Amino acid sequence: MQAFWDTFLNQRATLLTKLVEHLQLSLLALVLALLIAVPLGIWAQNHERFAGVLLQVTGIMQTIPSLALLGLLIPIVGIGTAPSIIALVVYALLPIFQNTYTGLHEIDPAYKEAEEAFGMSKPLRLVKVELPLAMPVILGGVRTAAVLIIGTATLAALVGGGGLGDIIMRGINLNDPMLTLLGALAAALLAIIFSWFIAMFAKWRWQVSVAVVGALVIGFGGYGAYQALTPAKETITVAGKLGSEPEILINMYKQLIEQADPNVQVVVKPNFGQTSFLYSALKSSKIDLYPEFTGTVVSSLLKPTAKQQAAISQGADPYPVAQTLLHHQGLTLGRPMAYNNTYAVVVKKDWAEQNGVAKISDLTKVAPLKAGFDVEFNAREDGYKGLQHKYGLNFAVATLDASMRYQALNRGQVQVTDGYATDSQIRQYHLLALKDDRKLFPVYQGAPLWRTKFAKAHPKLVAALNRLGGKISAEDMQEMNYEVNVGGKTAAAVAQAYLTQHGLLKEER
Image (cartoon, helix red, strand yellow):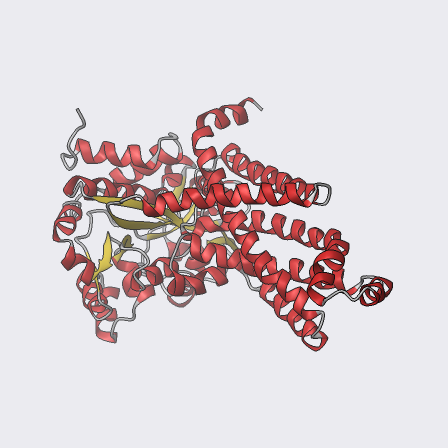
């Protein structure tokens, strides 16, 4: 309990910020869902042939996996709140529409006969009689939708949408159960409060309900309008993948860019769920740059020619090939850093000693084995597919979130996992990265990836980030990851310390 309280005290400012973001997302999504689903439910009363179709459509929409929906939305509407709100509205439509239709449809026919006897018009019947009678059922659907929205909104963190999901993802990445619990409990408490608040609508007079809703809409709307109308600097959006290392790098980018040009404002978006999310967002101009790796470009994002692939397989530097392939996509990769953050097949050190395992090919002698692989690694040619083709390895594979696979290995739930050469967990959990004796994994050197048009428009910023070229050794990167993941320092502080120490950032006086 004390550990949880300490975490709350340390994170209370961040918690308040993320709680407000989560509330804004949830409230806006709920209002939009109401504006769509309630009129549809009313309209369906007089078009019963379409009512069943609409129920099926909204039901099917709710079954679409959230990650897939977010991935499909990024190239269309970008990152941040837009795809998050659209996804949340999609999931909230079914309970609100279903309960609106059911509540109105099941009104006692005697009431409808009385309406006709008094000569009431259809709009008057709806407002004065039918909606008040159906309101308890409609509010039941709204409560269900609100709880669903608040729970699902935590996934907004995977596309830069903010909210309490940022705290939960950070807790998972840092293997900090108290931080994860803090975010989860805050989301659960918010859902309970929302549910209670909606239940009160049934008891309040309608004037009070309208006043409360109006105050909320004016409050959040006014804040949003203030932000939109306030003169702002040019904004550059820098995004990163899951984990401490991308977060450190994007904070380095932010600090170097703002030093090179004080007239720009840099927004960092950490913890994107998949490489494909970032790549799509960059190509569609929804973000301006993100740190990518040469090996990822030539093995996952783009397809080299057979000749290029053969050279890379023999150990050639993939950077020139990556640059050539990216040029045809209107993209440019900056100068790569020194360290090679290659993929690694990781096992426990003591297990490796007991079984005489030092290189990947040795795993063929210790079968059968259970592996826990990240979803992306499991599907990549330079991942598990490559281990199957090049090493003849076949494991019983459990796909795990990237931040959880090391925990599973440490607990003995799997014997093999994937990782990166600079991961702090290798040191933290006394693990061993096996030697890639058949050269499956190409060189993975990190560099900023941006659109060529953006690079030409911002030469000072490109020059500032290219100062990282040839810097940061594997030891440096692993130490910085350790300071964040184990030492509890923020990625921004660790980034600033490195840049200052190496003369890339001016010290603040």
